[in-house]
Image (tube, rainbow, N blue to C red; front, top):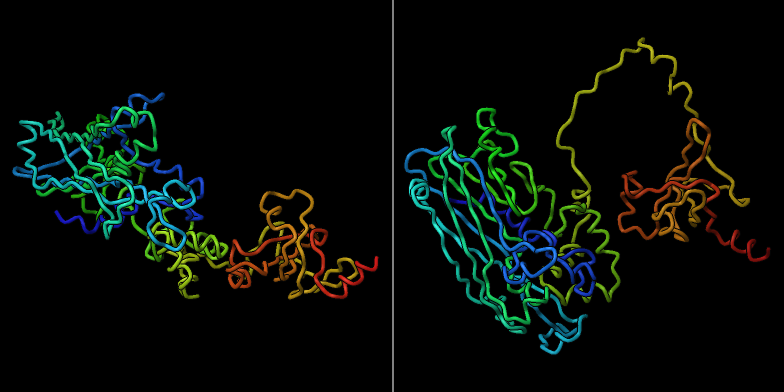
Length: 439
């Protein structure tokens, strides 16, 4: 089975949460991570209160012809603790300094092709997987490498509906030293991180667990999944591949074609993360550059992004709906917004200074300021527009001077314009500054 059409989404699952903004190894969120699909060694997991996961179970419904075969690809990450001096050279002593150490990951796979469904129906298959120690590219040995061991079980059950229920289990049985069994940091290098499976059928098809045909809904209801959830992947409407994902997805998930590369955070917008990376200090960028190679790739891609690529990341319209044209003689009802609308003033006087579009102001949030307003306190911005609502309340639409995406604000794009009343700004001019000093 060729899993090529599903590999991109599988890779996104594999690295989700791998390293998060600000992409520095010293950030707390990057020192306590790997929350998706981690299978700890059983001896460690059962000793925890509450118990940590050490196994996953996937069940789904199969419609199969005679002689149908199943391909299974197990994928996960193995963590390797690394250290590097500030000049980028490898340094084992750096492991003692949290600011110079981090965890990198190596992709591990175990493939099991052309399993006959008929054989699995007659006799379940159980295998002990032995995975030798992994090394990073270039064999950058800084910390000891560890072998991994897992128990893999596959069986098929015939249901009354004429369908087959596929049952797969993966359990981390890696042994641990007694002193390692009590420490999460020691157990993680022995864990299967972001564990998931790709399933492929030849001579059959899967049934969607999210939207099954009515005739198969009873069979789907018997499925029990632990730690993963199977969804259809590949090209819709094909039903020959499933991804058993530790993150619940819809059927046929896709990677947005506008995405220029990995940010390892599916909950955040690429544009927002790009702008945040650009605002990092030189010291933060240097730490990012000398840390994980994937973080370095984010920095280099972001710093070299063209304005066209940035605009592409801002958003896209994937579908349109038809707007009905309103006849000229059709009434709006009792309220006509076009009749009552008032033109906003060309200028507003603040501290004796007439402020117009294009003038610069300093932000001093008042009234019901939220956390975002507080973060912008004291910042300088340019007035992009003067707005007035139907209650005659005036607001300045401003764009921050130090916003890396300020051109989007001048294009009136959301996320780059902020609104403040005249009481919440002060003019930025030499005349006003001199007058205030005299007072």
